[in-house]
Amino acid sequence: MSPRLIDTHSHVNFQAFREDADAAIERALGQGVWMINVGTQFETSRKAVELAGDYGDGVYAAVGLHPIHLFEHHVDEEETSFNTRGEEFNADSYQDLVSRSIKVVAVGEFGLDYYRMPPSEDPQRVREVQEEVVKQHLLLAKEAGKPVMIHCRDAYDDLLRLLKENYDGPGEIHSFTGTWQQAKEFLDLGFYVALNGIVTFDKTGRSAEVVKNLPLEMMLLETDAPYLTPVPHRGKRNEPAYVKFVAEKIAELKGVDISEVEKVTTENARKLYGI
Image 1 (cartoon, rainbow, N blue to C red):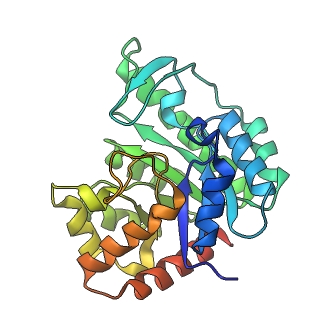
Image 2 (cartoon, one colour):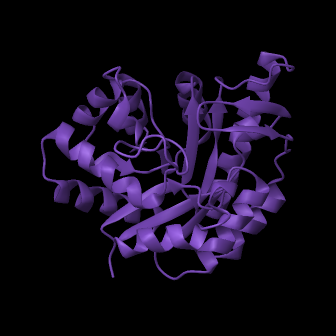
């Protein structure tokens, strides 16, 4: 059966779902929502691959090393608080994960994050390490023939430079929060722009401007569950089934029927990820 919606970026492989991952997956599948569970370290990437293997159509995986996990430090934000031990990117280990299953559909999430910088590290060194690891992921994706799924926070200009210099393949800019002008630059590189629950509660007007101008044909939907829970469930744990609220808000902002948003964004995800 074809999906109604695809959540292109979720983390049911995270500890937040340790007690009910299967129930959350079943709730989504029961509503016609497929998902890609995304790794941010080796272990969460491995768990994403295992979850994908437990299901048939509808549950897929992406593997990668998130920039905040490159150094040991404490991360404390509104929706999450944890200590990360710091992990060195091992291309062979991640290549092994990619090759384990055809249900590994992307390399990601990886990227640049200048917002959550380790306080005990030199910022310039952190940026240099992040850039080098981005290049290694891009090489892995090219060798594996997989699209990329990229995280970026407060670093869009540097990411655009890296992509122009090192990559000419397909991909997704995850959880986009930049300007419409920056979004256009990613579109010029052939990238899809992914939007999530932020569009339901962003009061800056920036997300609305991006939604109104971004062609549906280059848009993907996601939750980033368990984070960024959309209205009307703010304050609760996010989950893949809630991607429908993202679709509803985008339909409202673009002035189109929800069925059009569902149809086009689902086609986009199936085309990019081959699912």
